[in-house]
Length: 435
Image 1 (cartoon, rainbow, N blue to C red):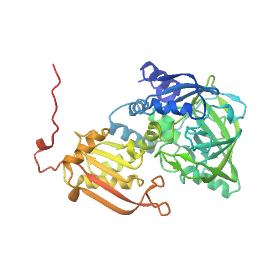
Image 2 (cartoon, rainbow, N blue to C red):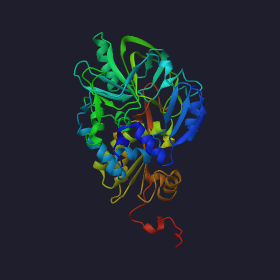
Image 3 (cartoon, rainbow, N blue to C red):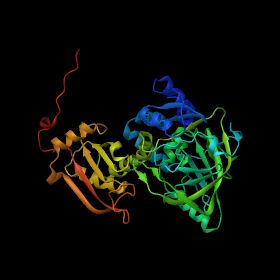
Image 4 (tube, rainbow, N blue to C red):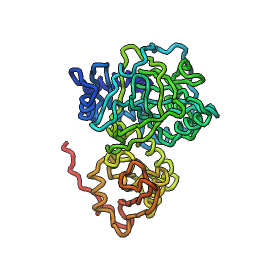
């Protein structure tokens, strides 16, 4: 694999095009709904299309194979381990003095920002990597946040109570605006890193740099004291305005349902810089790419914790049907009865939003729902192999959970074959391949 596939969104797009995977939509598509409809229909294939405001690309990381390309390949276990080690061993970014970006007019309406679903509050940036520095510790954070276009130079940004939320609150407590940058169309490896949750103080761009063996480059010309990873198609600078909040939403979240309207911070845009003939990269809300970017780092977390509980973990999948968030299937090579139950509890601990975990043998494909259901039908006894947990913390994204306390019930199912029984009884028949 050419390393620049991980480092430049254009190189990844070219590779996907040469591989015959890129879907090119003819004509010029409207920013409201029409472009989003074609992106949805093209899934899981990458797509390129034109709008009145410029070229749009999407679904670049909607397939696990493409994510593997960006990560450098290997088995699932190898990729999980590589990512976990990178979070523990960040690598500072080398600064380039002259990034190939040109400042343009400060008008968000000039960008091909899409409106996706019928009840969305407006046009949303969905692929923006927000980068900001803690005003107390100088720790830098990079994370992906949705941003509603309010007017030519203002955005309403959804901040969930994680690291950027904490940094923003610290700045507000001081009565200060919070300077930040937004990257759109950043190096592909950055999208994976920005979706991770390393410990506070670990800069996600430095995690990304470890994953590409120190090849990531940055610029400190746009945000004081911060190395912003480049190349990026669009780089927006500005600041969160202290004390200013507006309605944000409704907007479709990862489960395909509408998130509620909240008061969220306002980001005031001060500059917009672009690459020549820039591409606008967007992520379809609740689409395959959204699910994979959100889910894969949690798969890493589950694998890391579960592997300390029991050996033989091979694959972890946060399933598309579970929104890449609530349901997991874990394949393992069982050697001791009871290990699958320990793995189930480890998974719930590693990813508290999980609602359902199914553990299967290695001959079951966790990416195939029919295969998983077959395992449930042939290898599981409900009175012995099902764990129900009541009153546990769940996910705010789950509409069936108690939205005030966020409490939910959880289910774990051991769908592995009993070790004391003849394995031939559980083996699925195969038709030999013709010579």
